[in-house]
Image 1 (cartoon, rainbow, N blue to C red):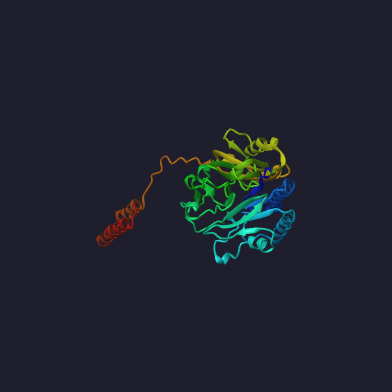
Image 2 (image 1 turned 30 degrees about the vertical axis):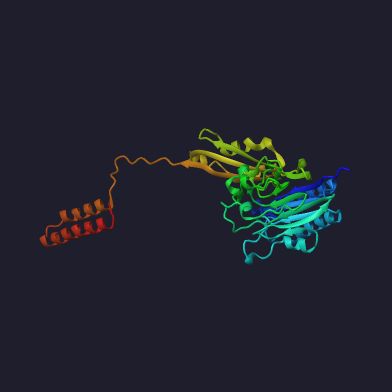
Length: 391
């Protein structure tokens, strides 16, 4: 009789309860975006009925998430637990405390409730070996270590348990060949240190979907479930469903969520533009989307007279109903100042001015004693000015 495969859902970087103060009154709605993406993952997981759910770090965006979000997560995991899904979770760089002063990870509460198995250690990997569909499945993991140097490879300093018919490990670090951007700087796993007989290496931290293979081992990063910044503009977001047996991964599928659209538009203002404000508005008005966060980059080098015609407030007011939120980045909008005509005006240094003043006084004095005093004052003053660095 053919054994069933072991079915897993792999999700990471949901970043629940983020801060977005730059959005002002829209901050609460933006936080709900991340919760909606999480709820979508939970709903699809209940439909897929996996044996195991792996959460590879940064479930929360911080170590002190608000209570409503904690409660929602607790209810969601309780449902999955009652469905028979085994949930394994590690802390990421956002929801793992950096020090004792920051307190305990909020993931401990989920573990204490009995709904998840939280691998909380940061210096070595913990492991559970369970029987699933006739296989001995070893699931191991370690939370993010803030003290590990970025040039270090976590798999060089930690042993990966491989005691089952199927072996799975969960970590929240970069994978070298994926070439993450500088903003996601973190300790990096090198291809040469990946065990070739591990069935599935579940990674988090890198916000883009990525899959690689080293020997038997599939290295999988599902990416984040919601776009967290404009660095992720246009990227697909989602999570992974996979099926494994003792020979490796039999099925791997990326399932998309529906992230809020982010878009950047660049507008260059020129001196000949009749109305700089209207030019910016007309450049983006046809993109109208009430769900979109729009970023406008305004550039150019214009006169001060033309700059006075440019109004950020007018742009934001006219676009307020066309987009979820509009950001204006006009740091590259510069103005030029015409230099005044200085023809016929002689430029004097402090030293020259002092010399001219004392010389005029000397020329108007006939008394020999007074001339002698002024002459000494001229020489002494010039010497002191020179010592002070006057020119």
